Amino acid sequence: MLTSARNQFAGKVTAIHPGAVNDEIDIALPGGEVITAVITQRSTANLGLTVGCDALAIIKAPWVILANPEAGIKLSTRNRLEGRVSALRPGAVNAEVEIRLNGGDALVAIVTQESADDLGLAVGKAIVAFFKASHVIVGVRI
Image 1 (cartoon, rainbow, N blue to C red):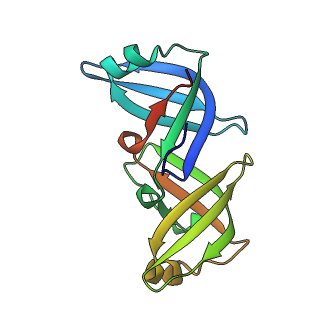
Image 2 (cartoon, rainbow, N blue to C red):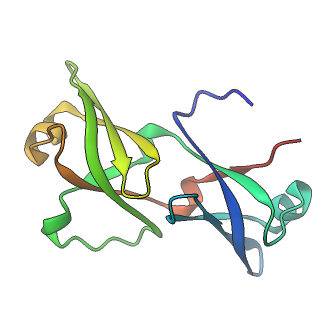
């Protein structure tokens, strides 16, 4: 599957929490991180999701929020992944930030250059990435 989304994580569904309209889907990555997605019950059924099945968690880079881990920030986002900046590509308006997660996967974020400067981003710096469960697109290979 080819998409324009930079972040595509292959994992296993570890939990499905049904709701009245939407389901919460937990996808465990090989490195131990868990990504939570919120999708409609119809999508859960159409994708054939069951606990133990393979699934993809797809997150567009501009949907990722970055923070310094020592900032003590709490957000209402369900997904919080820690790692270190592994590459930084500054631009006139935005910066592309590649993060090596503690479990080994890579996550890419696009933030404003001003935010990158304010965070003091540099290769090797510890960072926390946040994104909403509703911003996770779930896919399966057919």
